[in-house]
Image 1: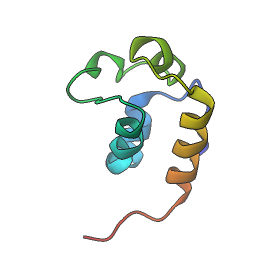
Image 2: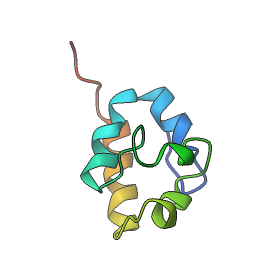
Image 3: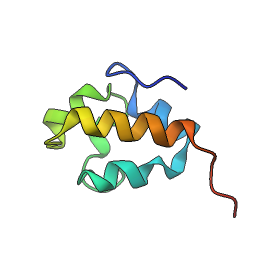
Image 4: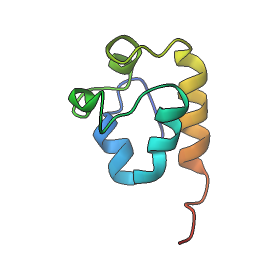
Length: 72
């Protein structure tokens, strides 16, 4: 999955629910504090949820999405 600033947060979490780890690394607790961002593009996380380094967030998120999911 190619991640862009226009990708919806819900699309990311639908593809990889464990991507919440990346969001949390940047101080975004999607299900608790920033649930209103779910149906919005990632670039709104920068302002709505206070991501200081959006470029690093996007890079980490893309790398995570390209990695294999953890096996239970």
